[in-house]
Length: 84
Image 1: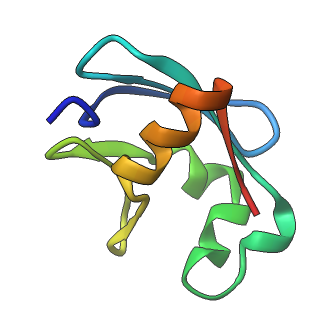
Image 2: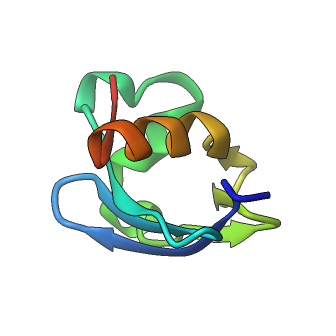
């Protein structure tokens, strides 16, 4: 799919830089207040840096992942997705 993520890199302050299969690029920024429950481990910079791509989906260990279609739509419109 065009919204499959093909590249992900971590940035500063809970930020990811992503590139999609169709060449669209952008940033994902997590607001600290969002990182509760299943997403709480992302507060740990060492854990956050373990991000990888699994079948086009941004993923971390313990089955934490982000919806690539929602991410794509926001990045296509605004250049970034602020997860809050």
